[in-house]
Length: 301
Ligand SMILES: C[S@@+](CC[C@H](N)C(=O)[O-])C[C@H]1O[C@@H](n2cnc3c(N)ncnc32)[C@H](O)[C@@H]1O
Image 1 (cartoon, rainbow, N blue to C red):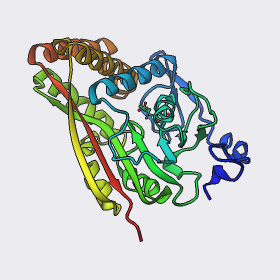
Image 2: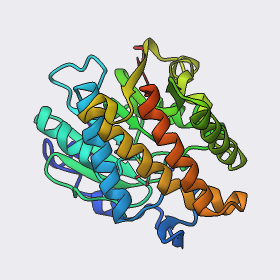
Image 3: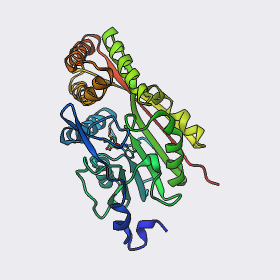
Image 4: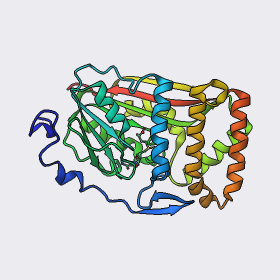
């Protein structure tokens, strides 16, 4: 029986409180006026501004993709896990689409959490780099979105293995990420992306892995794998969606600025000037940012 169904259908388990609050309590530090986790490799801030950006990004992705998921989900899906859930907006909207399902959102910090647990949604503090606090084969569908700035390159295989462990045979895993592929990027954009890629590599991250999500799922034994590159217009040249994505990417660059400039000993103004030139290039070149998605099914024994 699913661990939260011991008490009643769609209710969180009676013993939830014992593990819900026992996850890692992360310390924070201020850098570039932004609050950040000081004892996790995560590159982005955990503050109100980032919380707003995550909700805005969720809306932006929905406008661009037209759905909250890509896997061929059966309508009677009952157990869903969202890893690195952020504000909790994705599980809450999925709960509206699948009212019969119970959705669990996991994050190593509750600092961005806006949507707290309800009868159909449970938030759980846990660090996926250290393993998920669930028994084997619990979930019909495991979703992980935009953890590129959270998972160092060498951890991707073990994290996917952990997602597979908690997925039931026949269940689905879906990953969606952003990397460093900008179509019709000009030289300023290429230069900035190379510079940011070098800074993140110095910290053990590799954004260049993101186009290989499908390959990584295959390495962990998943079946029926589908990979999709999803170009989304970047800039006001493309109207509402392009303007939304541009605002979101600029806000993400701003969120990364303090970490990268401190690391490279570069003045913040220098970085800001680069970003201004880059944004002009997106408009002039009609650029698109490519999201990378892949999903696969855990085979039945
Ligand atoms: C960029 S946000 C994406 C949030 C959400 N998936 C979305 O698409 O809106 C990344 C989230 O992953 C969380 N995170 C970072 N490292 C993590 C870890 N090791 N285990 C669990 N969550 C993590 C962060 O706290 C943050 O909320």
